Image (tube, rainbow, N blue to C red; front, side, top):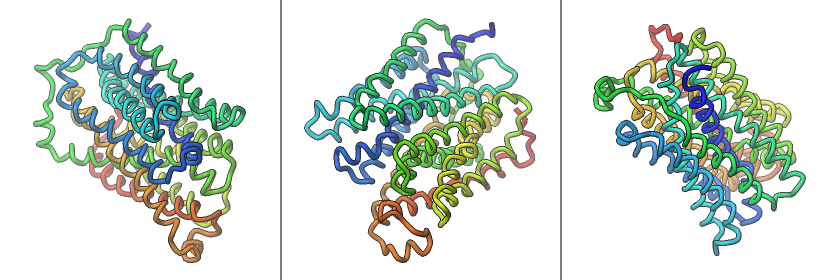
Length: 412
């Protein structure tokens, strides 16, 4: 058996937990909106709070991650993910204003997700291997695998039991982070970069590449998370499909595309060249964003929404691999900084989509329909305008990737 095999498996399950916690909320956007009479901005605010909390944890870890034992942190991360789901699920029963409970639960499980985001990548990077990029892609493949499982199971349960069953669904899913809490308690983690050999953040900030990497991570997070968080709501309210189709054919197939892309690159290992893969990912992500909202038949927009998962797949892990190659002696602080940058984009862009959707819903419908085509009402037009802005993120990422890979043979 490969050394630290059980550590790797726990990290894979940790990535599953992160995906599960983050992607449960988008499945509930419309049920929560209708049950508690929320606005699109309030729905988007849940995403904003989620990723801003993760970003705050990431930034705190830039100073602490290399100075403390990571094992208690990764155990606590899984436990907090479970607690956050519990608080979120009881919000209709124990809070006078259920939205306060939704926000509180979001903050708690986001702290757990932030810690997992910071710790899992450096732990995998510390496991002895000759195929670092492949291992990193495989780790991040378990994010869409978790997304697929959560969307498929939760979507079907909501269909058969009704939207009112969502609190019990969250309670049931919380078993997974509880199990991983116990699993991490019984494994021995590999040593991270020793302090005497570790590259400091101060030295990294003396190189211009670090700022390009942080910008690339922000654009990657904005692109991937915005589509993922709004896919279900957009397919249902923007394209007019049923809730089941929105969850399974929209969000679930989006996640399947991410699984295929990351497993493909991960299993190719050292044979993978990051430059063409990342450039193609950014280009086609922008194309898919445009196809989702332009005046085309609804089934084409649905197909673009589902297919976009294949193209956003390498933006986030690819940026991490570029950073690991540029700064091979960096410790967990670098991964924390990268996670903070990614979460900044993941927090702001989905929230902005909600803000834009609310404002655009009141614009001149005749003018909007001349560009976007026949709508299903103000909500549809608002969501289309909001998602159109998302296409800017992968387009801005193209020059960053070209600059970071200029003259390099990035077969890692």
